Image 1 (cartoon, rainbow, N blue to C red):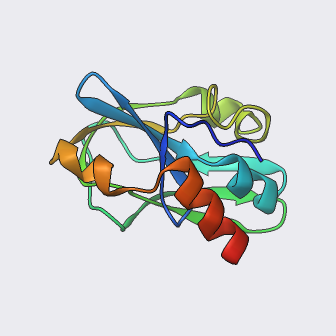
Image 2: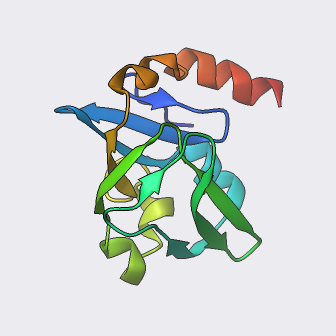
Length: 127
């Protein structure tokens, strides 16, 4: 299981990367592995407001459909349109090609409340 140390994580298996006052969000390597082959990704629209801990989209695999939960509140400023035609990027490259949305946080300090790589790894091992 790959867990970059420069990212933050949620117990719902999303990752967050700080970038110039915004955050990039995707799902973890652990999550994509658990889901299996991803066949469809549903994302919000640019301009949508995300509410922390509320669903903002979904990922469909050959096994199941799993909701995506917003790690923080904020406004969607960019979506990864490549996932529409290439949902397999989630399996191939969960931290690079398969980012899902870029959000302008309502409160940037909310990111600091998320899990570190070590905390996330410990939470996953408990489950």
